[in-house]
Image 1 (tube, rainbow, N blue to C red):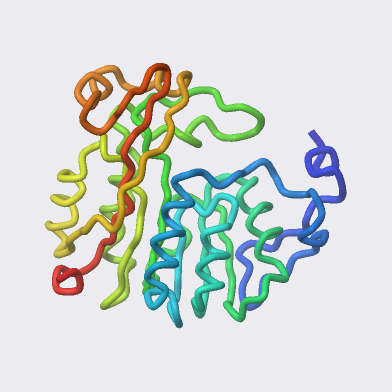
Image 2 (image 1 turned 90 degrees about the vertical axis):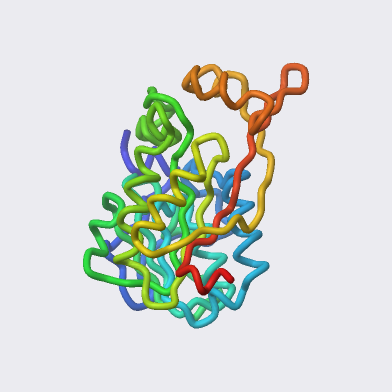
Length: 257
């Protein structure tokens, strides 16, 4: 498919990485030109916590792993982050983030990188790191449109990306920094705590929300996890199922006291 066909007009000219001010040629934000990346309930819960603790963002050098639509970066900019860095493996995310962030009323310095997890920022540290990673326990499956098969799957245990994130996090957090991430309750919060404890960090649940799990997606969930979590962190009401999702704050133990 041509770029013009995909976006309905000439595609954005994207320079990656984009440093200083975001320099892209894009249509106005009011035009219906955004790629099909839509914020989820997970994203909404993450932004809610960031807004409730706006002091974390003010003046911060902020990073989002798995930046997707770019809306979390936009929220961080609106909350006063000094710089915004987004990483995502999907080309669609680069286009969507550029479209969204261009021209927003923010003084934040912005850069976007298409790449795998921590690789584009090797050797760098950030004051605030956000992530809403794919962490649903299911095998990768064919995705609609041009999304990668991994767009929702976290592997059979839901942790294939989450564990990589947690292991790499300590060397990318600046002293006194913190991370805020979404974390499905049904994939083992204690395991995440144990990984972080080895590196001298701790976690705390900032909020817990229920999100709808559509029937077709529930059918893809790893059967052993579904059996173990039914009635505990997965709740059914007739044909409807909801899963518990935490938004978790990660920092040095004394910062969480």
